[in-house]
View 1 (cartoon, rainbow, N blue to C red):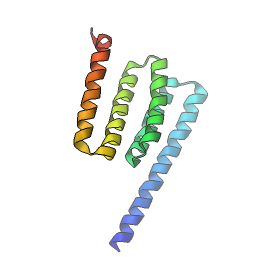
View 2 (tube, rainbow, N blue to C red; view 1 turned 180 degrees about the vertical axis):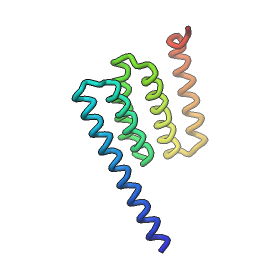
View 3 (cartoon, rainbow, N blue to C red; view 1 turned 180 degrees about the horizontal axis):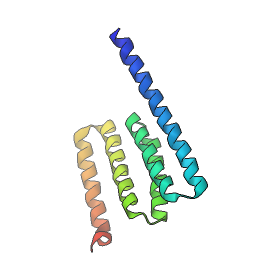
View 4 (cartoon, rainbow, N blue to C red; view 1 turned 90 degrees about the horizontal axis):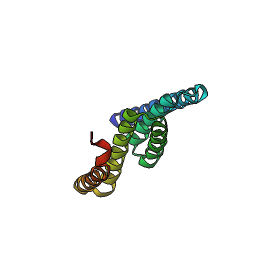
Length: 125
């Protein structure tokens, strides 16, 4: 009985996620139709969260890269920052899955340090 409940719960969650993706895709079409680039970038970013939660990091990264390109194109620095943060989280999860927690922390820390050093002039007032 317990196993059946867990399986049914998992199925319900999957259906809910599919429904969310479907709604986001409809939203994305509307934003494209009306030329709302900001809404498009936000929606792509949000879709990535569903794929990240599923552990489908490549698909999530694809949506994040699309979101980043749009946000950079329209000069949305706040959105760009949020998307870059989500990309780093995506990579962190992917590395954790492949290597385990501690190596991922070391690698991500090294990458963030390198990025900060490279881009420090951008953030200096």
